[in-house]
Image (cartoon, rainbow, N blue to C red; front, side, top):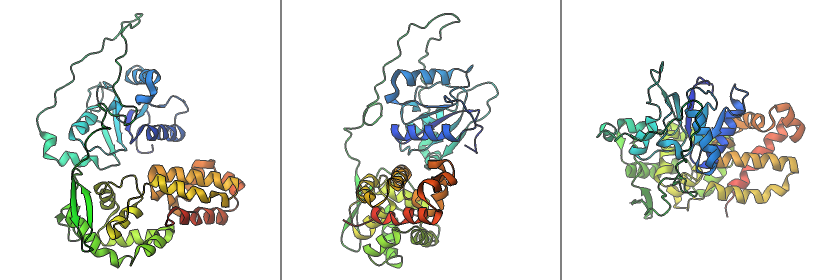
Amino acid sequence: MEQINQEQKTLVFCATQVHAAEVRDLINQHSDSTNPNYCHRVTADDGVIGEQHLRDFQDNEKSIPTVLTTSKKLSTGVDAPEVRNIVLMRTVNSMVEFKQIVGRGTRLFDGKDYFTIYDFVNAHEHFSDPDWDGEPMESDSRKQYEPQDGEESTAAEPEGTYCAICDSDPCVCDEPPKPLIRVKLADNKVRELDSMVKTTFWSPTGTPISAEQFVEQLFGDIPGFFVNEEELRKIWSLPDTRNKLLEELREKGYTQEQLDDLKKLVRGEDSDLFDVLNYVAYHRDLVPRLKRAKKAKIHLNTYNPKQQEFLNFVLDQYLRSGFEELDDRKLPKLLELKYKAIADAKEQLGDIPTIRSTFIDFQEYLYKSG
């Protein structure tokens, strides 16, 4: 929010409808505007109300809502010339969809010389894809009738075909599975990689390498970071040792960006990086973060009700954003987000050492085996 002009119209593309609702709430919480309608969600679930928010957003005479969050619904068919910012918070694997999303910002408007893409998912790599400059896409020539002054529109809103489960148009629930690349490593076990993921990996010398070579290289380097699964679990359960491991991986050439790409490659986007490393190193099943959080919640009864409420909040952040939310350097921000002020957090949870101990000790349950 600090990087954009908050008065400019903005589209935010999120991973799911739930994610879009959470981002909407955060934007309204942290924006300079006090208008409760500053940011709205528009997805398949929002129905008629969402369509009204969209019409208000498209109206060049209106400044509210200024920001819309969505998942897939607004990637096509939205004519909003005043859009100055596009924020990408979900992966965009399709070049066609990427072009459509970028197209939301290319509409011409008086005084608009450019628009800005804020990319949190490396979608900008599509710009270097040869397909980016392929055949021009067929423009959408359909025009909506705009009622004149004093005239009420009698046109029915077109019914969307977005699936309520996957929020895609058309539905992709029954799409056949993507082909896999099978890589047999030195332990004689096969790791499966998603062949549809387009990314570039780099060797420590700075030369591009294939996904298979990257996984083989990481597998070979892992004994230098931890000797077995139990040591990895012990390291990952504590923020300090987890950060030390991540730093060692970075120094060896395994940057956070490369490890994020690895998660996509092994279809571990919904899993913790711990499980991705465990899969590559020891061929263990990928465990979704949701499953980890549910198992950890079994141990909440060892804490008092106010601590339970805070730990549930922490788990929600973990489910949404991943293990990064468990860094003890994030603790002050988490407390401010939950309680608005550190003083209020201390009133509820005790002094800072007690809060920090609760925050760190609970993470052992999150990564506990079994």
